[in-house]
Length: 111
Image (cartoon, rainbow, N blue to C red):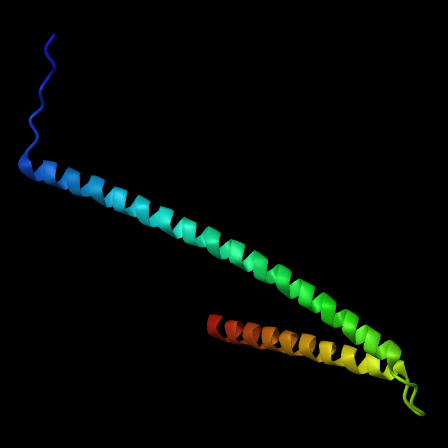
């Protein structure tokens, strides 16, 4: 049994080879980027866990310092706690202000 033979022009053969090689190149680049992404994701997770531990440790140290501080006339531990919480509120407000500012800029651009 003879196999059918199809004649392909030289130009078509070269174009097909280029297309196959280009597809292989794209697949290899994609695999490379996926491996980089996975490595970065692992690194990010490790850094987040380390940061979480440091925050927990620092929070415990602050709590112990507040407990061990002597009472001062006219100031209580509650005032100190309020100062710490007010700083956090300021950060939240600044983020909210930035978000609002960005939304205003977007609305101006859409007009």
